[in-house]
Image 1: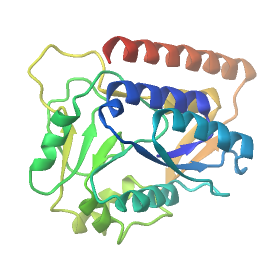
Image 2: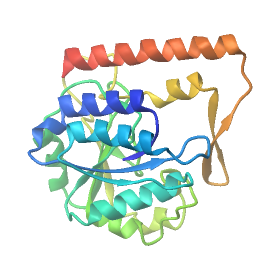
Image 3: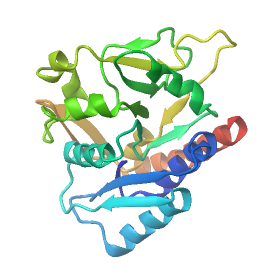
Image 4: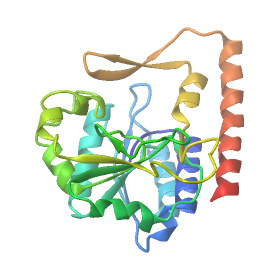
Length: 251
């Protein structure tokens, strides 16, 4: 899990995914990289608060607290640590919420198909497709063989998701297939996807904007009126409550 210090976001993420998915696993290990926010290293208190939240949901927590932020470096470290277990693993960033309960067996059935690199949980409702052309870092189950091959040319200085769409990774990993779960479903339409992104609301509440330049992603502060910031913070609190209520009712 690549993360930054924002306990209210992390708590909801782990609560919803534990309730609707992770509780189905007997033994759970979390690998978390906590990047500093505002270019300041996380304090000992922040680190301990983060670990306390994580240990509530996981049997074992492997953690790293770098002094400088770096999304690509965080992803590389988390994946490298996960490969030590030599089995499919779940990539989850700290700003997502699970909207309804999943059966882990139905998800893992897709790994029975040849050359399946990933199985991602869809955030858009009623998607009428089963396959994606490239890896997406929505909450996603990853094949360790696919990740081991990808890391040979993975660059820590580039955006970890977007670089899979370009060379050399695009050609190198062409044989791998990427499933969308649940894909085409024969049931009543849902008003929302399996997962929802809470990070967008959080950035607005902090007057932060995400930008991409030259294959790199970074956050920049944007000028904003105090009243607008207060409004965005209140909206964030409301959204988090609504996400939790939705997850509670469906998981």
